[in-house]
Length: 416
Image (cartoon, rainbow, N blue to C red):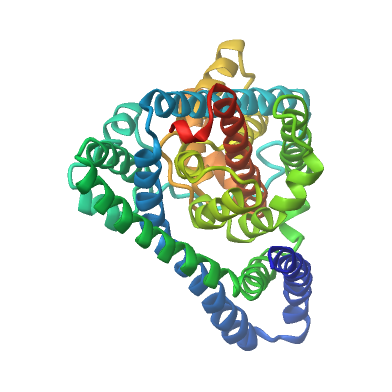
């Protein structure tokens, strides 16, 4: 079943990209703008967005119920502390490595561009990046119901951990009632996710047709070197760095991993949203990789919020690119600042399409580069956002696998 679905999504991806690019040029030649309005921006957009809404509908309850069950399943809370420690350590270290990697390569490349070479777009930063202080305080919700309604992932995780712990401290009768009810609700939303995934090939096709029918390849000509460098780094990090980590640290075959996880990667590519991919990622890790729900339900939602290696690489490369546009020479202190800010900027940021441009503004401000520089990369960022989402989501899966192995060495899963 999973193998057939993966193959269908792959076919839908290829057809969606091909049809989208073909339509981009065909509508110009034959003047088919009216069809474009109804077919691409109408039917295709409705199909794609409807599917994303179905998945986003289960994200909040799935995180809440599965994470509460995960906490309840821990009989030894030392294990819960260790899982949290290993998870956060992996995310922070991998983000620093990703940012440093992107900065190192980006600083070595001559992008051969100046302010006059690149056509600037009007840029309006409608959403100001949050401060570090507000990011920390925003983890604790003022109104838990508002957090659930707004889908604030970090606050939902906080709520699930606190209430899961409180329920676990109740007597056996009360605890068993809660556990049964949460299990039933969790199973219901997992079944809903599996049912929704049967429509995935059609949604992936529709999403990619709309995306590539708007992009074409014209916008990539002037920014070809930036686009190719960043795309290469993201793909290298995805298969090279993660592959090496899987092989030598996790002792897990990268070929088997990517084969099993490819349907999730393809969906992440088409949706450009780590949050929308959470239900699909959880299902794959639990079923295909046999990772306990208690670990997957903690690592994946947290990773969708703070583990954005692809975004960190983009911010590092984009910073060096924009610095070259304005003829600014970055110092060693600036490089260190970029790594630190690229790491901090991803913490608490929603895993939704295009958020990388918002967090990039936070990095640029710290090294005194003009925010208007973001306008130069906006035209190619949509496709790059799709690639870095795959890197982000895959990083969550690799982290889950590593944490699972670390905890397996410390004791059997019947202990927690």
